[in-house]
Amino acid sequence: MRTFLAALVFALGVAPAFAQETGFAVRQTEVKKEPFSDAETVGTLAEKSQVKVFGRQGGWMQVESGALSGWTRMLSIRMNSGQSSIASGLKSLFSVARSGSSGTTVTTGVRGLDKEQIQNAKPNPEELKKLAGFTATQGEAEQFAAGNPQLKNRKIDYLRQP
Amino acid sequence: MRRILPLMIVLALGAFPGWATAQFNLNLNRIIDTGKNLRDATKEVNEKQEAEIGQEYAAVLVGAAPLLANAEVERYVNRVGKWLSLSSERPGLNWQFGVLDSDNVNAFSTPGGYVLITKGLLARLKNEGELAGVLAHEIAHVVKKHHLTAMRKGKGMEAGANVLSMYLEQPGQRSAVAKEHLVGGIKEVMLRGLDKDDEFEADRMGVVIAARAGYDPYGVPAVLQMLQSLNPKDSELALMFATHPDPNSRLDALDKAMGTRLDRFASQPQAAERYARSMQGK
Image (cartoon, rainbow over all chains, first blue to last red; front, side):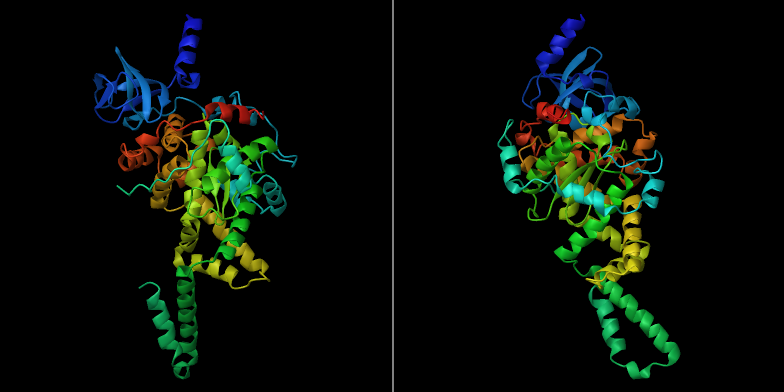
């Protein structure tokens, strides 16, 4: 069973991180068989229906509510709060979460981005100089965008204030 | 009007200095000072000055939390960020991106083009498209100079204007006092946050800048939904939630603004694999 689920998750290209998440519909919304607006409608979620969220593709979310399952517009869904804690996120597979600090001696509770810590922060121009060493040139950025997957530049107007 | 009125007061009063009694003189000076500050406050800060303010601003941020000591991750974030900036209206700024070694979930930008994201937020993102959404939102703040607007409003307009004009009027030999005041003004903005409407605007612009750069436009809403799923009482979220409209109202606003308008770009890459690889320093 477990293997099957793993296979399913893999086949759908759905990040397993989604598996436990839940949300609700902010309005009555259609559920489609596939993540496209012209796909077959398999049902309708009533406003405030609770859903399990399995993944996202573009502007669509794969959801399940009772016997109903399929794809619904992502922005028709809001997530339930308090279902995952920061601590669990930091235990993620990303080594970024594990790597140490920059060799600066950090006294726990003194530095940081809490309100009091910002209030007491001393500007650190030396640390800022390190940042300059990491910048990318336009050429490097363009080369990066030409990689895999390729990022193609488009002309798109800004959205108007509704 | 805001620009013209104080100028008129200054001109009108300044034209008859001989009338001033000692008492009047004192008031006159105060009015002229106020007029000057109001005028400066609405005057455009030039690009060089903006860069200088940005440097002080960013120095405070890296003073609060050091950079993440992972050159590969820092370079990766810079490539994504620089590529996004090329799709903004200010591609020529000295854009510098960085990761702060903090478990707090937040991202910051400064005048002049510094953009910093915390390790705590980075670790919660699922793909490069979401990272692009966060960075593009910050880039929008820089493009629209939202921080300068917020600084001018510091403790009432007069004080905010003072902080900026005190600093800007002494090129070359910035006094320690002027600098200290500027840092105070910067911290105030960091703790109070930008205008709520400017946050909504940065969300709207962020989705478009990310889509222009070839990413899935739904990175910003995906990050907002992720924030929504966290426990709002977690201390790592306190500052971000205190300085931004709640994720729900941001999602409502994006929902209305986006509709299906960007759907034809929705199949653009999210680059989840490259993101995971880069976070592992590979």
